[in-house]
Image 1 (cartoon, rainbow, N blue to C red):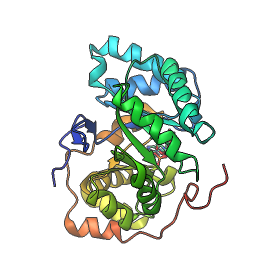
Image 2 (cartoon, rainbow, N blue to C red):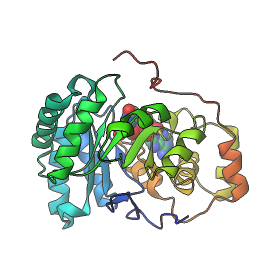
Image 3 (cartoon, rainbow, N blue to C red):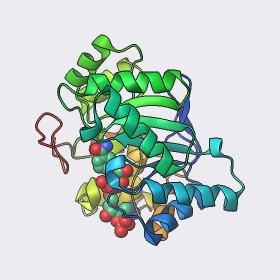
Image 4 (cartoon, helix red, strand yellow):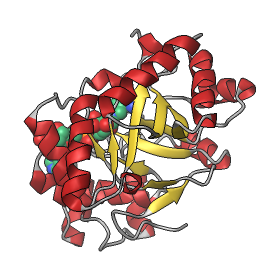
Length: 282
Ligand SMILES: NC(=O)c1ccc[n+]([C@@H]2O[C@H](COP(=O)([O-])OP(=O)(O)OC[C@H]3O[C@@H](n4cnc5c(N)ncnc54)[C@H](OP(=O)(O)O)[C@@H]3O)[C@@H](O)[C@H]2O)c1
């Protein structure tokens, strides 16, 4: 498989849209200067993809940071890839159409690069998908996808869908490798994307990863993020610290061997840091 060469390298989604392999997540970062500085710093350092969501409550700040970063770095809107997600309370055909407009006005954008159904709420996601298909057909969204969908959710959605999801963003890290889901997505041309790739910091003292990191002269975070890319998984680590924003992206100058990849794959314990998509109550 082709492996990303640098921060601007992209995967081609099944509709031909190019999506960066690497991006910045902004979950749990409140509106304000820390958020704006983090997004601007990432773009200045070469990041081209930013992942937000309506429920994060920070789309306005992300929009402001994007506008300032475009100007300060001489970039064009189409140089960036912006993702947002429709929240559970807004799932349903008319609700999702309205939620999308709110998101766009907060972000200050005309066109969104990727819009995701945040969680597979039973009985609700098909109406939302219909709305997203229409927005996609109208050119308001360049790619549409889902998040936290298990294989059975994808199968159910695809039964009625006109457009197959381009992306499935799920919790994915060395303790939750989701091999069946990864294989299913690959078979159907759905790009898998990792959320909480660093397990929200909980993996950063793992001895197996520490040994590989020491051998490579890299940090554990860098080893995990490189492992994502070599497994063909888009990754969006979150940091508000400029030194970590830089560190996390410095993963294009080393390669994990097949043996090291297998060692990391074998850390799987099917262990989640976030909610279970088959058993959530929000
Ligand atoms: N679709 C979904 O349901 C869903 C759910 C969760 C997350 N997400 C998306 O995925 C993104 C990433 O996931 P996440 O934010 O949950 O967790 P994460 O990226 O796995 O971990 C972030 C945590 O690790 C720390 N960190 C980052 N880089 C580090 C480094 N090099 N060394 C040490 N610590 C480091 C950060 O702290 P500092 O900021 O202090 O550096 C933060 O506490 C989110 O921001 C969001 O965009 C989506």
